[in-house]
Each structure stands twice: as C-alpha cells, then as structure tokens.
Image 1: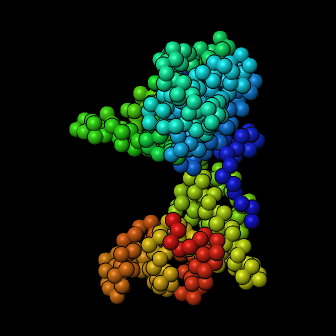
Image 2: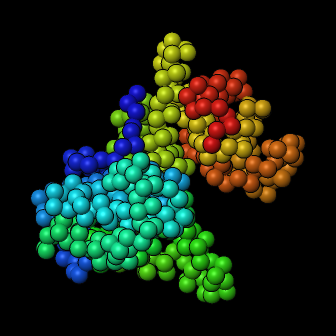
Image 3: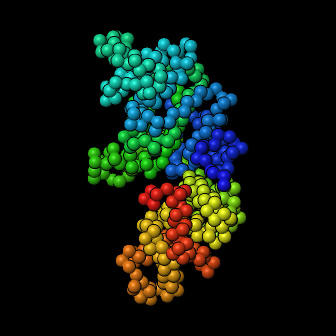
Length: 422
C-alpha cells in the first residue's frame, strides 16, 4: 500500500486539485489592493485543502517585493493569548533585521504587557515568539510597572509604532503578507480574539492578512460571542456572514474538488480498486468529496487489506475486498449499526434483504420487519445506511455471513483501532 499523507502541497507540480488558476486570480486581485491593510478570507470546509492553497499562494511572492510570515494559531491555543502570539511572531521576524532589532524588542515588551493586562498572566518564551526570553519576563513587567515613560508610550502608541516598524521592514512600496492557517482548529474564544486583534492593533499596517478557516466555524464563533447580546435581533445580524463583513474585506471560497479529480489523485494508494468504477461510485455516494476524509478512509482500508493478506497468506478475493470496504464505511459513518454487527453479525444480511424487499414492495415493509428486534427495527428507517447496503442494485455486493463479518471486524480492529473509537 502507498499511504496518503495529510501534508499540504507547496509545489505547482503537485497540484492535483488544480488550485493554481484560482491562486492566480486571488494573487492578482491582492497585488492591486490599496490602501492597506487588507484582510483576505480563504474559506473552505475541514479537509478541503486550505493549507495547500495557501502554500501554493505563498510561493507566488518569492520574486515580488513582499515579505511573508506564516502563523499557526492552534500551536498556541490554550497556552497563551493567541492574538499576542500572532503579534510576537511578526515581531520575531522584524527583530532579525539589524536596524529593527531594538524597536522590535521594545514593541514585544509592549505586546507582552498588553497580553498581561488582558489576562495572560506571566508571559512565557512560547508566548513571545522568542523575542523576550522567559527569564526576562518578570523583570520586564516590573520595569514597566514603575511607569517608565518610554514603555508607556510604546503601549499607548502600539498601533502606530507597530505600523512604522512594518513600514521600515518592507519599504515604502512593499507589503507584509501574514498567512494565518488553521484558525478554525482553535477554541472559539481564541479564534475570535485573533480576528478582533486585526482591528485593534494592526489596522494601520502595510499588511495583508490571509485567514484560512471554515465559514461554518466562524458562524458558530460569532453566534457564541454575540448571540446572547443580540438576542431577538434578525438572524442575519448575528450570522457568520455578518461578522465576516466586519473583519474580511476580500472573501474567497475555495472551489470544490470534483470527485473524479480525487479519484485520479488517490487511485494509486489503493491498487485493488484503482480501476473499479463500482468502488469509487460507492465512496462518492457514501463519503462524499472531502479530500481529508477520503484520504483517511483509503489509508485505513489499504492497511486492512494488507493485514487480511498477511492473515490468509494470499490475496483476498475481490468480493471479500469489497465487503471489507463496505464494513469500514459502516464503522466510520454508521457507528450504531456497526456495534450491532459486533453483537449480531448476521444483521448485515438480514437488513440488506429487508431494504431490498421494502424497495420492491413498499406497502408490505411493516410485515417484513415484524420479527425484528427492537435494536434492528431502529435501523430500518436509516436512508443513508440503506443507500450503502443496497448500492449497485442487482450488481450490489453480496452481504457476508455472520462468521465472515466477525472475522472482518477482527481485521479492522488491528488497523482502525478499538470499536469504541470515533
């Protein structure tokens, strides 16, 4: 098997999802944007390729008069104030410039004090991006507390001083592009503070902030933040889109990756099914077109097939391979029924026969399930499960017997983890 990694791509030749034309459109639009700052939202669902899109875009700036910084907020989530970590990440880059080192360190002290006042407590080296060493933080806070006039000027004028430092860093006609990836992996509170910090501290800079996140997550964050305060207001007032208008000036929604594209990209990882249209149609109808979900599924299935070969000492029949593939979908998407199969492995065959008879004779469906246990009756109304078990109609995969189901469950346990895992 050839496992599929979840690492973002960063070379155009690896762009199996054909993002490059969209990167070009967004890159050209941002290049013309004035005045700055500008906040760009790259929106897509979990696992849709946002990080790969951003990495491809970042390469476009290699030959331009543009400086870039990459920030992963989830690395700091629950450790420090994430918005402060963003500031310190930028300042750490500025500190590397010979003529900006002292100014960056002074601004870092001011940022640390701001985060301290916001409830961070004693800052750490992690929280300051290395600009302020951990052992110096306590002394620094004491120095500020004696009302040093220079330090208080930095705190009170942080926004304008920060903008001046960035200007010197990039030059009069330059710009700093800050890629903020995986913001939707943070807690709602952390995600919100990062978004708000762009307005509070960075609103005068020559920066382009690129935020990659799931719009549905943003909507949930906004509702959680403002829903109670705006209780009774029209729903659009507290929606993610309404908040988006306040933060993001240029929204870009990642194009859907077609299932045929995913098949071509992933087929080499599962040679047993590379050319089997039935298998790929089954995946499309039951798992959809989310790249990350399909990658994970194919990796687990490939390992399960390899384990089955090792257990049997030979290649498994094609029918067995398909049955194992369907069982893994059951385990992944229909946990309740999978647990029933563990206890009553014959129910796969029984329920499939019920669905087929009910499809042929809908009026007699109640009589068909009259003898079912209470647990099994609950699955007779599960339409997605029906689609899975009867996919292909007359050419569908024959359900395995109870002994075969038990053996396949044992195989999956060695590759997909305990039956209680999500």
